[in-house]
Amino acid sequence: MPPKKSTTAAAASETAASSRPRRATAAPASAPAPALATKKRAAPKPADKETAKKSKKAAPKATTTDDVPKAEPTTGAVVEESKAAPRKRGRHPKGGETTKAAVHEEAAEAQLEDELLDSAAGAEVAAAEEKCELPSALLTSTSGSNYWLLKAEQEDRNETAHNGTVINTRFTIDDLRDNNLATGKPELWDGVRNHVAANNMRAMRKGELAFFYASGGKQGRSPGIVGVVEIVSEAEWDLTTRDPGAYGYVSKEKAGTREKWVVVGVEFRRKFDVPVSLRTLQEHKEGRLSGMQLFRQTRLSVAKVTANEWRFIMEELVG
DNA sequence: GCCAACGTTGGC
DNA sequence: GCCAACGTTGGC
Image (cartoon, rainbow, N blue to C red):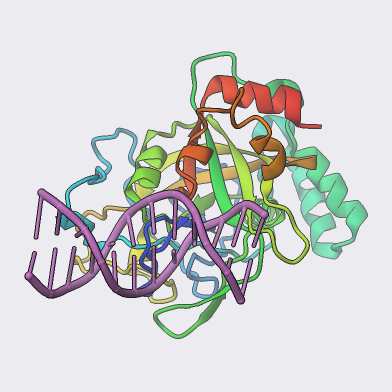
C-alpha cells in the first residue's frame, strides 16, 4: 500500500516513492457507489483503520482529468511530499452488499448480510463470495478499455499514524470483499503517494477491471495475483492526506485546496481458486508478459496491464 | 544539475 | 536477513 498505496510516503516516515497503497477506506458517502449502503461505517483508512472517518464528502470526484490534479511528474518541487504511500486497511464493517447490481436484489442482499453477520463460518462466507463473483465471461472486456493491477500487502506490518494509532497495513482480497459487503460501498484505494501510480489511477475509468496483487512472500505465502476487482468510481482527492489517523504524507495545504493525491473506488469481483503466483508470471517475463509494467517498474503499487496481458493471464494462467 | 548517501519496497 | 531496484534528499 499503498500506496499506495504502494508506497510510502506515507507517513512521515516513509519516504520512498513507491508507494504502496493501501487499502482503503470505505467510500465516503458521497462516493458514487452502489447505493445500498445504509450504514456507513467507515473503514479505516489507510492510516487508519481506526480512525475512520469518513463521511465527508468526498472530494469532488473527478470525472475528468482536468479536475484531478495532475501529477507532477517530474517537477521537483511538487514532489516534496510524496513519499510513500501508505496502505491502508480497513476494517470491516458489516453490512450491506456490494456487488453490482444485477446480480443481487435486495432480498438477496439482506440475506447475505444476515449470513455474514451471523457467522464467519466458511460455508456462509463461501456462499456470499459466490454470489458476489462475476462470471468469467464478464471478466475480459472486448472493448478497448484498460486494465490495471493494484498491489496490497498480504502480511501483517505495523505503521504508526500521526495520532499515535498503530495500523496494520495488511489488506487482503477477503478484506476487500468483506468491506464491500459490510458497507455496501466501494473501497477507496487510498494512500498512493507515487506519481506514476497516481497517474495510473487518474486514468482509470469506471467499469475497468484490475488484478488484485498480494505482495509479500513471508509467512509461508507467495506473492501473486489473487483475484479481480472493478473500478467503480474514478479519481477523487485522497482525503487521507488530512487524516491524523492515517500514516504517511499529510497535506500541508489549507483545507479546501486541491490535493495532489487521489483515490479510486474499487469493488470485489472475483477471487481465484488458485492465485497466479509471481513465479508463474515470471515464467512469461520474456514472452507474453515481457512488457508488463509489473516487471518494468517493480515497486509500483498501481500498474497498468494491457488487454493482451490481461487476456493471456485470464485465459492461460488462471486455473 | 550531478550524484552520493540513504530510505523503502518487496522478492528471495 | 539479504539485497536489488529505485526514489528522495541534500551537498556541492
